[in-house]
Structures are given as structure tokens and as C-alpha cells.
Length: 331
Image 1 (spheres, one colour):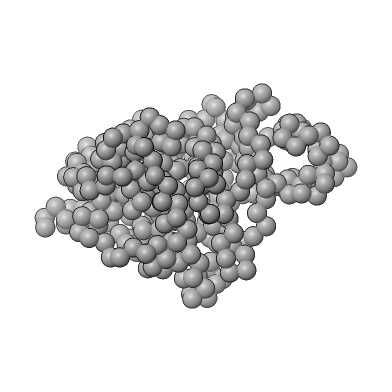
Image 2 (tube, rainbow, N blue to C red):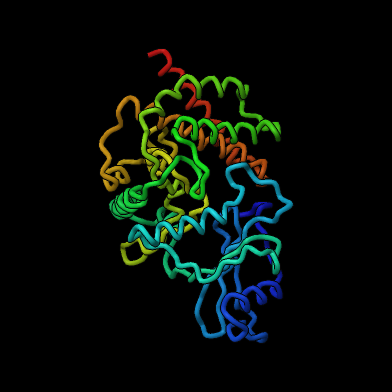
């Protein structure tokens, strides 16, 4: 997938990065013409699949270049991912890649980067359309169980993994969604609604956030596209740069409870062990889908999308959400 945030590097620079990470003896032979290929599935970072001289396959993930403006919540995303991988590795049994080497010096390239082993498995998001419904349900049930384990990590405050955080979830989430709206206003992104109206909708339902009192590790971006599967099992979870401490109900797997366009959450919730949503949970869940939908609209400007497919799709979801939230106001 194409995005102006992808920070592609020359073969010479990649070879220097390999030498720093694994030693000069692992730099691919100059006669080797197919030692590197770009993994093109993601939208934000560039990632390369690399074969080292001894035959091992690794992935190099590189953050966006410094001169590219990203959304507020994406600043320092690679540092977030490295912190998330450490927390997950220390506190859970969830399969995530090890970090072989991380370099934040900007000496060899103009951004943070790190190396990790290549996961020899299928991406569930790319595989799912070919799977029988029962098999896909089993994977989504397993994804729910994995997500619950991740949410078992406790934090000291709400917000960034490295802090500083907020003492309440209401303060944290309203700041997060406020940052997204500020990003949209700065680029004059047309939401189809006045920004102040969106803020009024958020304020009208913000009291539903007060029920959340314990900061939990939230992966947030745990969709089928970030699950690697092999032989009927999840063998790897990737892309952790959007993690924070918050309300587990904000996780992506719950989004289908609000709008069917995001898929069916039944198997995920069964695996997670979550019962049906209470009235208050449903109110704040819709705020979380509003947050996601606003990002999906506004990021198309920051990523430099060359078509309007995502923008148009997300604008429709925003209209549906505003209607749902307005209905709750009348109840």
C-alpha cells in the first residue's frame, strides 16, 4: 500500500544498517540480486524482508522521515512499538517478534528503525476471504483470547506507555480525540460536519467514560491484518505502534458491535469472554468507533492518498455514527 510516510532506503544504506545490526559478516553478498524485498501490506512504516548472508530471514522496519508531518497520535510511533514489544514479552505469552536490534541514533538513516526475525506464516487479513466461515470464526475467537491476555497488562496512568499519563480515562480519551480533531482542522479536512458539532457530541457522552477506572494495556490496532497464522494457530502479532493504556473496550475487535460495516464481532467477543454490552458500555463504544472513523477520514490527507476510497467509506460511517449517537441523546 502506498503512503508518503513510507521511508524507503537505498540498498547501500540497508546494507550499512544490516552491518550495524548483525555484523559485517551477515551483509548479503554483492552478487546476490534478490536479498531484499519490500513488504507492501502496511500503510505507515516501510518494512523490508531481508535475507542475511547465512540464510536467515529478517525484517527491517523504518519510521517515517522527519520532514513528513504525521498525525499527533503517530508521533514517536516506533518508540511506542518497541516499548509495547518489551511489555508483551515480559508480561504475556502472546507471540510477538523479538527485537534483534534497534537504532534511534539517525546516523545511518534519517529515522528510527529496528530489525526482527521474519515470521514465516500467512497474514490472516490477506487469507480470510479464502477461508471457510467456521475456520475464520475460529481464528477470530483466538484473536479475542489473545487480546484479552494483552489487556491483562496494567498501567499506572491512562495514555502513552512511557507516560506521562492522565489520572482519568475521561481526561485521556477526550484529549486523544481532541488531538485528532485538531489534526483535521489544521489541514482543513472536510468531515461533512462542523468540528464544533463533533465536539458537542463527544461532550454529551463523555460521562460514559467515567466507569473506566483502571488503566490497561490496549493494542488498539489488533485487526486480522496484524495476525500471522500457520497450521490453524496464531503464531505472531505484529504492528504495535498504536498501543497505550486505556479502556480495553476500545480494541478494534469490538468495533463491529457498533457498525456492521466493520465486520462481525461475535467470534472475537466469544474468544475474549465478554458478555453483551451494557447501555453505558455501548455509549462509550460508539465514542471509540467515532475516534477510529475520524482518524480514517483525516489520515487520508496526511498519508497523501491518491484516491478517495477510504475517505468516502469512512465519511459514510461517520454519518451512521452521528445518527446513532443522536438517537441515544433522545433516549
